[in-house]
Length: 585
Image 1: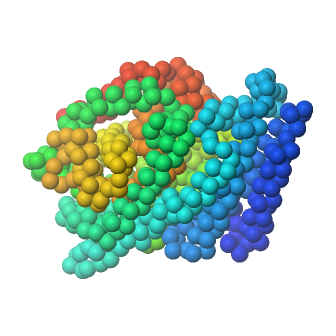
Image 2: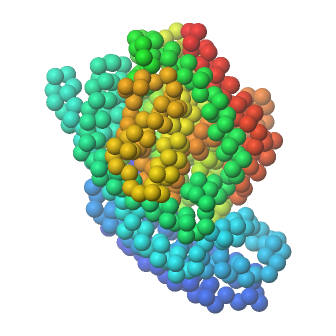
Image 3: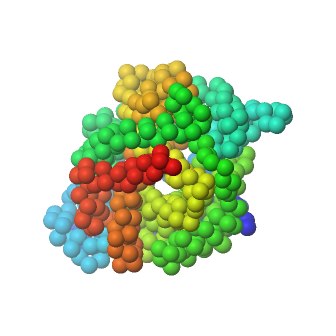
């Protein structure tokens, strides 16, 4: 089965005449929208708003289509200069787009009795979108300032982010395998952390850390520049901190974050027991070295071909609902997935929901392991989320980061539970331990990343940080999160370098949303286990509602109070039971 995605539903290539035509149409729509806003007639507010929103929706669809083709191409061909140039053309339009959005906010602020206006049948569909714009207007600068900031980002944080991505995606690691010196792409070496051979795991870890010497100073410069820009941006807009800015843009309140983090901190000793037990089984007496965090246990040779992974996922998704199973099957058969690891391709995995064509594209680095199979299920969950929003206007299809993990964690849970149900002996131990690896990453490692980024912003206020300082902060954060479960002499000080999320100026603290998603997704799955098929329709409705609600209100749809630490504790107790089972096995 083909393991490379097909992007022809977007364009036939960069020389496709439609690609040029769409770029020209984007520019025309920007001019048209500016004209609509500058000549806004307040005597016919309803008609004017409807006209603007339809034009804006068309513009967003075209931008998504044009941009996605370039960005997706670049993610698997990091040296593709044509794709890079196309990304830069879109980025050059961002100041104009920012100007339009500010002008629209200014128009909205002048409309009297806006809530009454939004009761109009045609406008009611956009009521949440407009209400959110008004809420965010207090943090918006004047039109000219917004355009300047957006323009400067193109040669600032956007440029630094692209540089860092190129540094890591083209980094070749020197490593000796079977007596032969090789140069391998970083994602392939990082995947060796899952190898059954302890010698290979340790070699890969040592080679990986050594390889960062080539790019550490450059990456630190990128990180300092990006985080410095974020801090300046926050101050200009009136946010008290980057975390406040993140929460507001995430439609999440501080009480929900506090409830989540308090429950996680309280649960850490339970995870430390898991790490110590795994260390004991692997013959370590000083905690688990970082290079063995993902070490497989037992003699099971459990693995999947790509076709077997497809059949496993589709079959178990179909047990939940025919709609979910059909979505996954179509994604595989229609070549929506790029699964093959190769040079020039970014590491990790992601899903790009393409509302403009009603499809998704999924990037993975599949190596046949159960872990990578579960990752495919996770990313397909993101894609299913997008499919549930396919009939919504693109304006209403954007959901906040914490809710972005809802469907992915739910689908991950389906796959993991199915694997556990049909396994016994060493296979069951392997699956249970793989599951706990993932849960520990999302709870414990995510907590360390949250601590790291919090301290990074605190220190960056006073000046740039050196490579040594960044590594020191990371090690301290890992020790706080992992406790005595991790060997203090075998940490991973460069985790700040290989996680791309730290380099997104518009997505700070891209860590706690994963922990929220895990526990929220588990809460949903518990409801499914209780209610069965009756829950399926409500689940799809919930996913569809994520584009037009706050996180707290989404929770209320299923009678969950997200200000209650107890909800998050209950999710963590489910994991604790699995840890107890692992320790007893």
